[in-house]
Image (cartoon, rainbow, N blue to C red; front, side, top):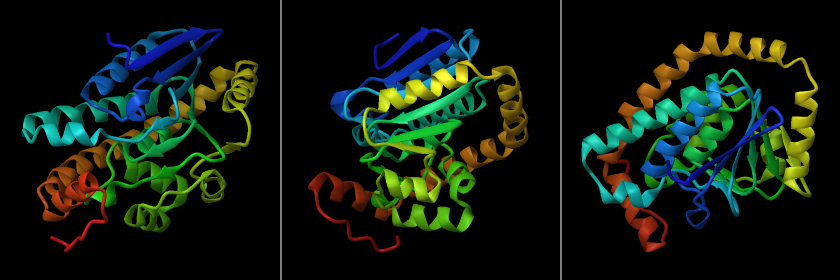
Length: 257
């Protein structure tokens, strides 16, 4: 087990920390594998509340672009997408109450993961974006599913197409996050976890399970559709232009090809 994802359990609370701070906790293969293992551990643990956060100045900047560039092998793509599906479905269905604590940049796959939790708490100045469109891709990690749940289909489409970066206050108004914090994020998260650990958690988790069981088939279908769509987009000229523009630090010139 690597240290790219840390796990601490104490007083009925499991804290999972994405730990690639120098890379803004972007998700490479190693981190995804480690996160999948940590989630398995938490699923079998006695903790009833789970906090997911990121080390350093970001929750997660999303998928690791360098990883995408290093390999064009379809088998590598399939492995990554399979891991993403495992991580998202496991986290979404955890028989625990989950909190994502957004301590900074939260984008792309990082946002999909955050939205899979029961509560999303963000610092007021956190930068939040479903920004796959910037490199000619579509959301993955169930992004279509979670955005639709949070803001509705029409608004979800618009936000995905625009890929704009928004901050805490606007995210709260849209319903993407449940609470914003002006001061110390940890203090507010501790207040949430304290309240939860003094709540009838079995009843709360049972309600969660009912909704999760009802929705899991749709989430899995969307994850499968995202995998197929993402493969198609990775072969597009617009994606190639988006990645090159990212590397060149310039605005992309898309042609709808």
